[in-house]
Figure 1: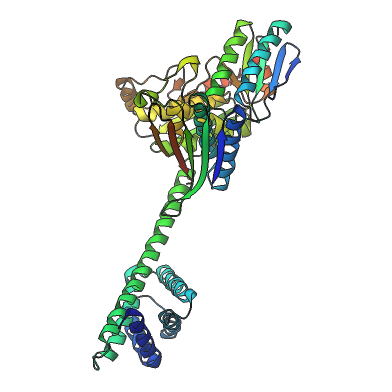
Figure 2: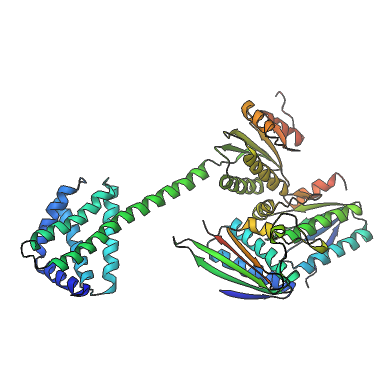
Amino acid sequence: MDDQPIKSGDDVVRVRQLVRTAAAAGGLSLVDQTKLVTAASELARNALVHGGGGAARVEAITAANGRRGIRVTFTDSGPGIPDLEMALTDGWTTGGGLGLGLSGARRLVDEFSLTSEPGAGTSVVVSKWSR
Amino acid sequence: MDIDSNQARMAEFLRDSRDKVLARWCELAMTSSAAGGSADELRLELGDLYALMLRAMAAADESAAGELAAALAELSRTRARAGASPGETALSVFTLKDAVYELVADSGDMVPEFLAFSRLIDELGVHTFETFAAAREQIIADQAVSMLELSTPVVKLWDGIIAVPLVGTLDSARTQLVMEKMLEALVATGADHAVIDITGVPTVDTEVAQHLLKTVMAARLLGAECTICGIRPQIAHTIVSLGIEFGDIATKATLADALAHALGRSGLRVGPA
Amino acid sequence: MERVPIIKIGQVLFVSIQIDLQDDSVLQLQEDLADELAVTKARGVIIDITAVEIVDSFIGRMLTMIGSMSRLFDAETVLVGMRPAVAITLTELGLTLPGVRTALNAEKGMRLLGGSV
């Protein structure tokens, strides 16, 4: 289990590298590794840009049938997402032309859960399993 | 009496009556099993199991239970390879109960011990079944992967032109594999044209069309252009009525047409020698 | 912050991205390219991403913007060397990088530009 604070652009890069290492060690194929790291990049950037900074936690997980996987949890204590349904629709963007990338990230992973309360921050948990 | 002392008493009984019980067990197991193998082999197998079971029941060491489970799994696999059904293997285990019962039935004073023993044997029998099922599932899963791999070949048609013949339904799992193999082939051969032959795809609905579009998009990101061929009259009708648009992706009826088209784009032309 | 070097070869600006770039570096690259295009009047830009393992929506959008910006300077951009895993991921994300031409490698990229440069 690894915790990485997300307070700068460099931290986003660190999150990518952490997830890449964990995914490779967790037995994910190259394409699946790339998808997970890309999703992590989107979510880390969200935490930084829209969440005012936060943290990422990377964990190796095992399913009941023995399959291995990686779970990444992103938390921030930003303003939260007021309209979840809209945020998860493709192409939704906030100001500055930077999309939230949430819907994209969701397509890249096997499991995706998001909790957000306006004023109480956002938490996104994603996981990807080896085949 | 608690379970442990029940087990201990049964273990003692089994140890003392080993030869009688083992002989009877072999007899019963022989008749219940249709699998080949001599009586001597069977006696050896069951003898080993008997010893392991005694150790496990005496709770002598932790590894005993694990070794017993492993030995049963191996027995199950060997029998399966010899053509026996999982039921037959389980029956061989269950017949031990009968062998023991015959000996204790007369005295009637080992009832609780026997019940506990019976439960233990039931668990072991179920274990052989589960091992068999798990092994089968693994074989099926491996075969599914092999089938997917085998049905996704990528061939080089000419310098700079590769072909991807698709056979069977194009679901998301197959699409992933097709994209991976096609892109790897593009990089390996340095091709800038891919012909996707859908002659072997039974139906083309909106989902399949999406998968095809994705595949073409991926190829384009690597600088390769795609031509889709193998449009049969029946699916042409479906495609049009579903309103599927292939946009700027070239589509041809046959592989030959697609090859000619690709050659043309490379500035080549086929003529008489 | 890492600055991506831009090399001029004839009429073409050559950019090779070797490391895991953070967002500021990509924005800086865009600015630097604009400066170079204005000064050198280059007709083509080749961006080599052979060593790039991750292209997410932000970087994807930046690449598209670089393409549009180059066109403002009458230059064409070719993105070369995308890794298969990256292409598959971008496709899944629905990012097609419109306005940016692509090629397997720098050599083919140069040939693509050859017509218009």
